[in-house]
Amino acid sequence: MAVESIIEGLRNYLAECPILAELSPKGHIDWTKADGKGNYGIYFDGNDPISVPYINGSQEMQYTAQIKIRKFTDTDAKRLEANAFLERLQRYFRAQNASGNLPEMPEDCVPTEVEAVNAMFLENDETGKGSVYIVQLHLFYTLYSNKN
Image (cartoon, rainbow, N blue to C red):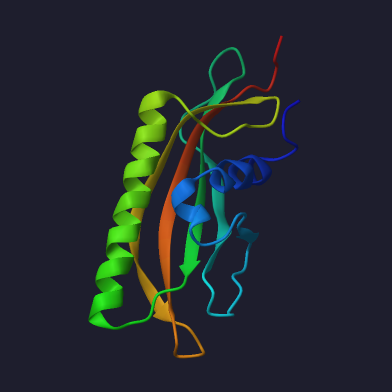
């Protein structure tokens, strides 16, 4: 059975990532918990067409989201640890693409690629004990409006 929404499929997909599981078993949607234990949130950025519709009614689309990771402090040693974590996460997504392991999507959507880009430090959190990092996700898929 297909998932009800793209964000649900993406959340389930990210919950299977062993690197993110080091932080939390399942990410929050549109927020992170500032408890200092380490967790992540998935933030929707947009769902846009990237081509004109084909004659059969299908269209190439891009769904963009961010993963915000709350854990690391802003010391040099922790920044190095954070950057290594972000690099491992990006390599994980490249490997998933290469193996064809893509998120489950709603019935009229077929995923073609997911990439993790622009991994970087965002801000120190309000407690002063941790930092927030982001990774932008681009999920490319074909939307079928008249599926036969």
